[in-house]
Length: 169
Image (cartoon, rainbow, N blue to C red; front, side):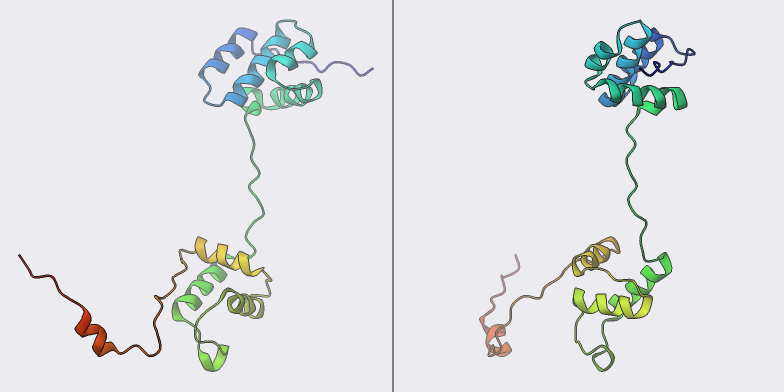
């Protein structure tokens, strides 16, 4: 049977309980209370039950507590993968979208996500899904704007005559 993990002794159970009351995150508070229970001599299974975890998770938390102190019991969120386009390349995409496509070069009169995806692959060698292109455009500050429907046989003169302006008070 493996030996029990030793706890660091520079914090008392009372100090940990006090930190649990002043912390802003409930998860860190639960973990601090579980470690304080272990320092008070409670069994690991009972302390884990107090913290709402199993014994193995408590053991992992004790390792983090020993390494980093009470701050080691906070939630650590993954940052995600880094962007595949550098900031300079993102600026190039921004200029490309703002300038619009050249029909002679790109073969389209307005950008679609699929068209931008092909241009990004050709220029930068980075392949994205079309939905991801929409996410990138949103992060760059662009939004999807669709024009109002316009009937092809609509006469602008008749529309102007039909509009009624409200009289000024």
